[in-house]
Image 1 (tube, rainbow, N blue to C red):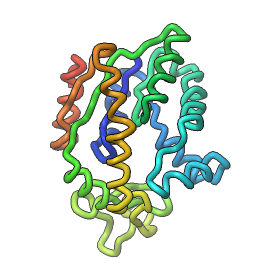
Image 2: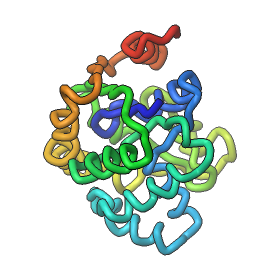
Image 3: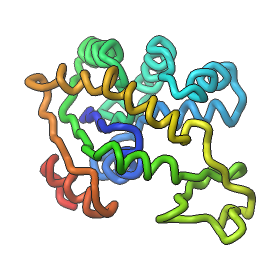
Image 4: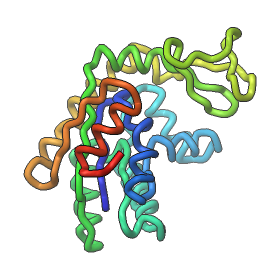
Length: 216
């Protein structure tokens, strides 16, 4: 089962993806996570990705599609994956449709998390990340310790450069212009489930599972 999980930055895709992938019995494929791994390791791909991500821009399609193609070639992806944050543009969408079709596979469902832009701004600009272990926090809902340090390893937590308000607004504009049109292209081809992304993690999870006909 190949499923696409859509939604603007800060809509909760990453939060919901792991549980959904586990429930579906498929690997969770998130290009953002893979890029961050390369950033931590200082690889050439990581350096290239950083030059775009720090400006709030999307990583070029060619780089992203090559990365996804490699992941889809691994044994555990043969029977399906949950795509999180991919495709991010219409060219990427047609690439993945063609790639799956060429190997006798196809998309089964699309889940689209819907969250108002104002809520997204609050969610993202309040995020903080540990400089050492990568643990994530939020200044309102899940703050670090009283000294602003990670509760896991004690190292400082910071606001990532791509979590500032200016960058977030640019990312939302980019999503509306480049990624949202993917959904329009998929209507009529694949079942598209629009899911309210506002509420507790469990509430949103139940809505997603229900949309896909899964028991929570």
